[in-house]
Length: 122
Image (cartoon, rainbow, N blue to C red):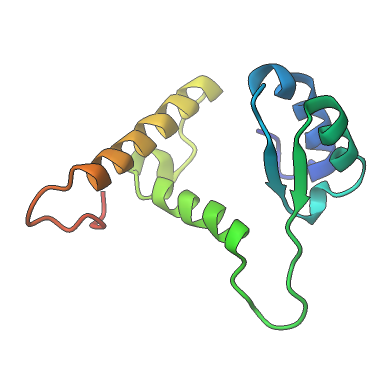
């Protein structure tokens, strides 16, 4: 996580340090145009992964499939009271709550409770 005033490319430099160790099986990464440039070549050489830059549609608003995945997931996470705001002091705690939120979401979809709306507010 970085501050809002940090540019995407600068944040990517910090990410490079641990990415290969943390994600050894990574094959494909989608990123927005802020990550275009030398990071694409670095991902191919150092990780053996393809960094695909998702292009924005020119002109009118068009829902973009790859971007929609991220936005939709963030919306699902935001439905959890603890994750609606940034209350946590430690990154590890925030990460643990994210895992719990997604586990809960998956369980509710895999084993729905009869008579209960699966998409009701959590």
